[in-house]
Image 1 (tube, chains in turn brown, purple):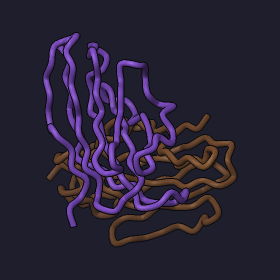
Image 2: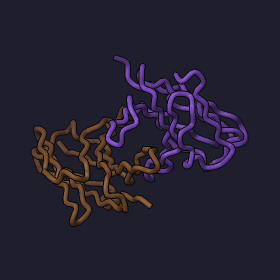
Image 3: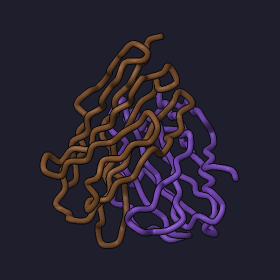
Length: 116
Length: 115
């Protein structure tokens, strides 16, 4: 069975600090995708990034960066110079390929609070 | 382009009553998914439609839950009769294709409270 673990339930940092959100996953599949979603106070889940299992290159998008390491089954997310608008719940998810069906397996989420 | 919409945004009902949640996917998206988040736990998959057909309903908790997608457009999720443990946030998502890597676009969710 697939599993995603986000051990950090809540994190608070002062604005402009860097913060890393951890994500550890379990899967028997060799082909899979990892995702990060952001849930702002408005409630919808906003897609941030998708990474496939064959691409271990780190990715940077503005203040956001992601570190994918298959050796440790981790897909961590770092926000540099955090801002108040980054306050949200962040979910890591894994997409499994199950007889042609696709569904996302989510972690429990990390609530990030940026203190002004 | 309109995103995924869900109605109602909140619903409070008593145990034993019936509630119907609605999801309107992004126009043209054949794939529609329902998920549920209970009590701050992980978001769990419920089922997946491809057009009007149920592709995967392995996550449906029991037969009190009935999902439909007539005509392959909007979808409804009916809970009858509702129990206390059904409380949570129900998310709907849609995607244009069935490939493994397709991004799923999520709606704002319906917060269901069963008293």
